[in-house]
Image (cartoon, rainbow, N blue to C red; front, top):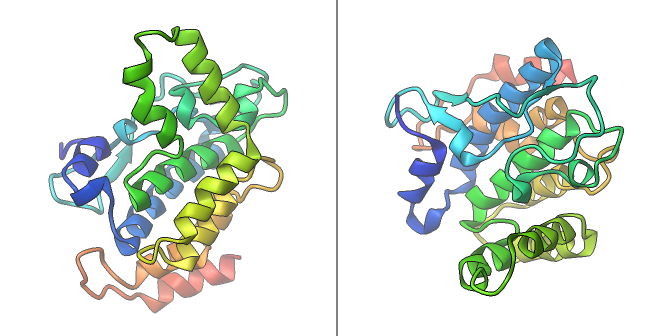
Length: 225
């Protein structure tokens, strides 16, 4: 195997990738969760860089989703959390009785944020956790994570920071904002995200710069819309 996405990102300069590479990778992630939602009626609930693995070293087209230990059928609602709290959707942390596949889209949004910026969505918590653990209980750290994830204004400020980064395209920012909506009903679905301009562009340029434009593939995606 080619190692996890977590390991690969750790070797990238600044822990981040350019927009072309991010689009290439997130397309594979979206296809994986869409298959889970459509064919398996499963919500993965633990989407993070450690749970994506490359099939072969250096092959960015071989990303696979692993570790279904926290996965649950869509018919099972109302259970709080799943995997890592900082990647969980707000509705999962609130224990809402109507959580669904949109929760996985949020988690992928958190991962896309990290790939584009080199930071976690909750970086101000993540960077200080080790220092604070000396006098904060685990429960207080957890409460802070939950509060920030469920704070729409905080998330909006983080997204506004991304908008100011000249290395990140407006299409990437648009998709991030659509994936990180507090209201799951307003959040973009996996299939709609696959048809987003940011993702569709990944069919035309390989992350290494090779032209792989396939007009038929893109046209089929547009017709499917």
